[in-house]
Image 1 (tube, rainbow, N blue to C red):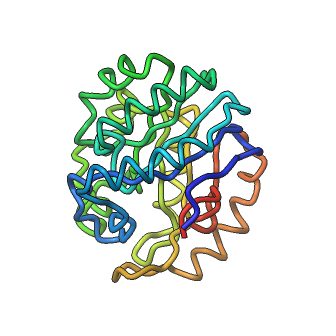
Image 2 (image 1 turned 120 degrees about the horizontal axis):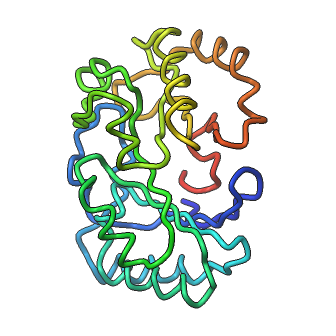
Image 3 (image 1 turned 90 degrees about the vertical axis):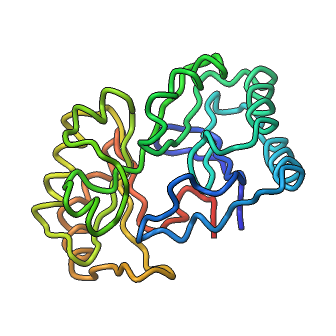
Length: 229
């Protein structure tokens, strides 16, 4: 498990993968990432403080991720992040949050005291596929609702059951309503959700140009940010 990296290409920043409490939702059908959690505050503080000690501030920006939402990080870790921000002169913070915490984002912005880019795992703007297949538990109906709260959606592509038209529409929405976003090519894991290899071939050819788009980060493997396993 790698928990620290320096991203040097698009949106240069340091990134840390910390340990938090179990995801408040924790029922997405595609996700086994949520197993990286704990209920032991001392264990989490020990690990998280070690990882945060590696942050140098050299990029002026920091992304903090965990197996759920930033609101599930222990208070001691949140205070340590705020301390690191001041000590290392961090000017921009990236956090991720589930839709259920949408009314608490300003609370976190005020606590950290610097601009925060809030990511959200939308997975798809196709409401039926998102809720009935992926079980995301995100009740928005339109992209405008998401854009009202969040800055940077993460969408997932090349899942069996998706269509080319669904993926085209998701990328169109991403570009139209948001100034940045992440596209994850689904990687098979321990869940029953499966990658569609034919969609992967199609996506790699049609959307190769996104590699040069500074506003979109494409993850071809779930470890492409240099953290995880």
